Structure formats: structure tokens, C-alpha cells
Length: 492
Length: 96
Image (cartoon, rainbow over all chains, first blue to last red):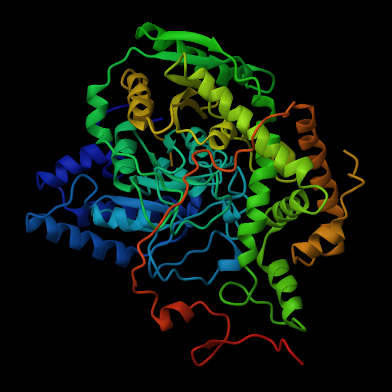
């Protein structure tokens, strides 16, 4: 663990780097070269990227330097290498979802998030590994490689956005983006010791994000600091006519708002999140963090979210139902993997999907097909949607008396690779604390709050009111400001 | 955990258009059975009078102006096609 202090270029924050770029003490090309060099040095051990194109990234960096020289720099992200999960479309780059189904797919267009990042001058850097089609909690479900946790290479980085989290933790990207359907940003952020944020459903456009469960999926940032997450979120947030579920709300300057919101806040501690299955070291670190908020003058209230125990069940009905529908598009006809040995067109569907999808994706499509099938719809899908209403109501009820809710992000620190691979249900239960947030559509952030004896990072989750990301970020930064976790990096 | 009696894996896999190997059938039937047994706990919840939630923040009647927009050029639209004949996607024979 390296101490706080001046750090290598590739471990500096967007805020620090933007100031140096602005003062011409640093060029975007020098920064990109440092990140490429770091990636070449550690990637064999970390395995965060499905692919990267250093030449293309350096060309983007030269364009950034040219803009700055011409006096037309576009803000704090101009020239910053931003890693993207391999489900976020970038025109002309591979878009694989870490699936054999899309192994050779090249995106013909940019996602809205990509377009906005480019407009902000960010360098779109690399295609980051994930659990196939974002289904998993360890990144072991990738068809291509298993990303390692930079803090302990024998452990998982979390998932599904494990590549996005590991790349930032390892200094292979300054910030990155992932997607979060049931915890896929917050849980890997927690396990890799960085900040990860899932915005309110509808804040960030899903146009050009490969769909898993459309009523739950959101794109969000990974960063070393809350301020960097605020900068990155601000670049992609906002209404998009190309996503009919995107919500037209005013987007504040999240970074500027950080300085304006001082608290103290009323924070709710849901008793259901501190029960059986919570690792004692995680519990202790989270309780210490809650104690810190108390010292800052925040009022801490125990609250109840009574339907918490049903969240995982409701989620695995709703998410798999939506996935079975969304993934029906992969039929081997217009794009994606096509089986060579099919005897007719219907057989082509069966064989292409059998060859193109991995085990977890098949399991979820089958479960989702089952819960939607004739005779079971009311018992499973419709009931799960009603339970979703109750889960959402629990949160909204809590927000009548508290400003935000504080919990652990993950019940345990990073687990060993292979430990849960054969037991899908055990893997699903590792998302216990993050899933309710997606069902309720709320914003949630995970930030580092300590380490275990074995030097594994621990994450603190803070859950905010809908569309109140500015307050959520400020609450997170109030804790972060008094701790130096963000300055600690793995030995690689 | 035991297998769920009413899960007809062959039937559901056929609906999902996925060919399964005998090994996959054996493994999935146990694993999916575990998950179905777990999600059965939702039956405990009293949902009488509760409306279902399809989206956390539903937006209704989203209209777009009826304007012609440029689409993908043909070459771009076809670049990921598994097989082509000219500007068409080639598929196995559908009608005898």
C-alpha cells in the first residue's frame, strides 16, 4: 500500500490532471503515453481489457492538445483517458459484451454516453472486460478472460463491470464507465477500492448500451474520488430523445454543487442490511464510517426497509424476464455469431444461440423464459413487479425522515476466483445490498471506507433520493475528505 | 436442493430457442431449480391491492417530431452481417 502524497501520473485524479493540462505543464499525449505504458506494464496480471487501440488513443490525445493550443479546450475531461465497459458502443470499435456471440462485432455508431464524452474531449480508451452481457458478480463469466482484483490477483474484481473497476484501481485508466443492473458498478468499485456510482434510472441515456434488463440498466462512472465521479457523471447525464425512458430533469454542475452542500444530513441505517451473512470486518468498517458521520453532526437514525429480504428474488425474476426478451435478438441472422452446421433457419437459431452464449447467459434466458411462460406469469413475473412496488415504497417512505441511506456495498470483501463459480445462487446473494436500489430506480454510490486485515478494500454504499445526485455526492465527499483511502493503491 | 417438479427444461429451452447438451440439461436443471426454490419465497408477501411496477420512473406518451433523420449507410448496416449477397443478408433456405 503506497502512502498518500504525490503519485504517478496514471494515479492522479481528473481534477489534478485537468489543472496541469490547463496550465500546459502536461500534454494529453504525455498523459496518454503514461497510461498506455502503465497498461502495458500491468495488464498481463490484471486482464482488465478485452482490447485497446493505443494508436487511436494517442491520435485522440493529439487532437485534444491541438484544441487546447487553439484555445478551444472543452473542460476538465478534455484529454483524460476514459475506459469504457465493452457494452458501451463506440463507433468503429469492437463491441463484444464479452460474449462469443459478439466476438467480431464492430459498432457502427456511438452510444449517447460516448458521444457526450467525445464532446467533452475525453479520450475513449479501450474495451473493458465484464461478465458476459453484464450477467454476473465476478467477471468470471466473460467468454474471453478473467479479470483479477489488482489488490490480490487470486481474487475477483467483482462484476459485472470488473474490467472497468480493475482498470481504474490499477492505473490503466483515469476514470471509466460501466453499467449497473443489480450492483454491477457499486460492487466492483467496493471490491477494488475505488468510487463507483449508479445514477437514478433515467438520468443517463441507455442509447447504445447493450441491453440486459432495460428497466434496471444504468450507465455510471468509476473514479478515484467523489469529485472525479461528479465530473464524469456530469459529462454523460441528461435527457436524450433517443432513449424514451430518459427523464428530462435539469442537470446541475455536480462538481460545483460539491462545494455548496455542507450538511449536516439525516442518515438512515436500515437494520435489514446488517444481519446474517455480513462479514465482521466489513460491518466494523461501515460502523466506523457511520460514526464519522455522527462526528460531523449528522443525525443517524435506524430505519427499516421491511421488504429487503425479497429483493434478490424479485430481481432474479424481473431481470431474467427482461433479459430473455432483450437477448432474443441474437438469432444468428443479421449480426453476431452464426452456427455453420444448421440444417434450416430454425435450427440456425438453436445452434447459433447454443454456441454463442455462455452458461450463465443461457441459465438466465431459460429462467426468464420460464417465469414469463404460459401459466407462470402471474405467479412469478406479475408478483415480482408488485413486490418491486413494495420495495420502492419502503425507500420512499424512509426518505420522508432521512436524506440518504448508508449501508455496506457488498456483504464480503473480494472473494477468491472460482469460489462461487459453480453455485449461481451464492453468486446472486452477493448482490443483496445493491439490488434494491435498482428495483427502486434510486441513485447509489460506493466509496472506499477501509481495508481488511488481508488488505482487501471495503466499500460504503450511500443511497440517495431520486435525481438528487448532487446531494448524494456531497454526502459521500464529506466522509472522503477526512480519509486517505483514495490515495492508496495496490502493489502491482 | 431438489429439482423443481414443474420446470420442464426441454420445453422452456425450446421456447428460448437454445439447444442444450445433456450435460447442460443436468447441470442447469439443478442450478435453475435452486434459484426457483429461492424465489418461491415471494409467495409469502401479501401483494393484495398492490399495483405492479414496470419502471421506477415511468414516462408516458413520449413523442418525437416526425422528421426524416439520416440512418446508417448500407455498408455500415451490413458490416456485421454473418453472410451477404450484395446488399442483402444471406440466410439458409426458409421455404421449400
